[in-house]
Length: 431
Image (tube, rainbow, N blue to C red; front, side, top):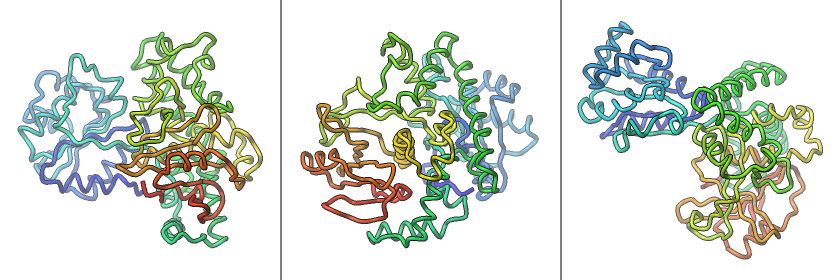
């Protein structure tokens, strides 16, 4: 499957001052697949070492982390030559070996002729930074997310539709009705399938949507296993309780995260570290409240108020057991608003954006406000065709953002300075 990270990997390989690369991201977002696919296409050969599974290499690296020693150990263990400039050496699950992670610094300083890439998850929770320093400044880092809707369309052999959507966005013209309907159908399908590569690949091979939740449940079980592996027993209980509470948090009219929903008497002191664990693991997305719509947004954050979304909308619909018929038929259901917001949060994050939402003294709430350099974009999200709402107009009047966007199931258009963009076209936004 084609991923947007492919371009970044090519740029990394061609860089004059190439550093060892770390591809970071949550479990099963496709990091290893992307690296091995890239290696097959751009190198004479590659050597893949899973440091979580290969205990002999991991223990050997504890002794000596010089590039010469590591290359010798890897070649002896894998029976493959690591040739400068011609081989891509891939360290998989690199967070399992803090010494291997530290060695990347020396590959950059002492052996830049070797092309080294590492894939890993849970860096923020698995690496003991008191004992080992992260090789800051000596590595390049690319963060990988679940497949966004554009990647999903390409995987579903809908590249033509994808191009038509982009053209309609660029021209500000409605997408032809038949294509608009097709795009909405695929968008609804994506809300069920989500962007985890295993699920997308299964759907691309014509697997039934009824089979997808089984794959998603396996992914969630792996997340839970990581909680037990990288946190104490007491902390694991709290982390899982926070994670399990997300559907209930999003089902409220006020989607602000409330500790009391996790457990009666809950507080930031009890659950704050657990939420940060989930964020660092890439399992949840945090959307921070702002009280003013000025640049820089980060200066106007209310740190006590935030929303949590799941990193993949398909995992949310699976976890809630929301009937597929409600999604596919656009049936009236109050929770669909939360699902739609989660989808947008996921897409914006994949575009590299920090998430903020705006509230005004309980009178209005705007779903997302995005800052990209000196540009401010206000985004209102509607789950269906009904698009009446005062929050975006209030924000527009008070702060005059560079662009106002209303995302819904309506076709492309513009009215009163607000740009109407279909939910399926969020990847087109110029942020």
